[in-house]
Image 1 (tube, rainbow, N blue to C red):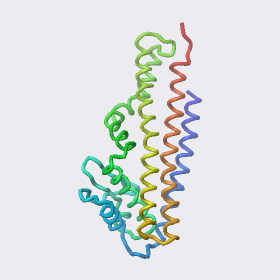
Image 2: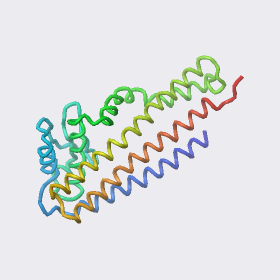
Image 3: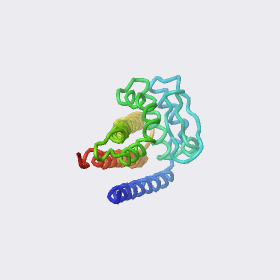
Image 4: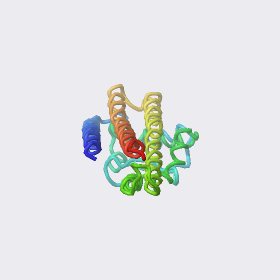
Length: 232
């Protein structure tokens, strides 16, 4: 267990560093005002319109970095600062979330796969580690009876969450690429503003990369505890 705590601590530290860097980047680029004077809301609405999407609503949601696209009710949810502000950071985030809406409209395969896994992962991810630990206590490490099957079920559930994390990567990177391509093609930002938007989105993507690596590391650790123990 000590090894696991060291692993989780190291991943947690890296995650905190990347998250902290992301917040600093967005704070910095929030000071780079857009010359076109458009707010995040206006940027989002224009990108949707330019892609022929008329059934998606752009709304404001409380909090910071709470921006997301909801495929169930087809809404682009922008945090209050992104929704109202007129800077490189808000333009990047608004366009990125609209990138997900474009993916949805075009039935982007990775997004479809991710959406399919959401209901299952939302149920299984929270219980996976407890199943593994419980199974090991019941004798799973030695391949004994019920404990073994409980622990294996936990590993499978954790594996699904790990797959979900890695499927999320192309979804997020593609949304950013769509956003940046549109911002440049439509001359929505100056070269300086574009550079800020690109940098901000790169750091946002890295948070998902760290999360995926962390999920894989955790899966490998627990799989070794279940399948690498002594056998009678």
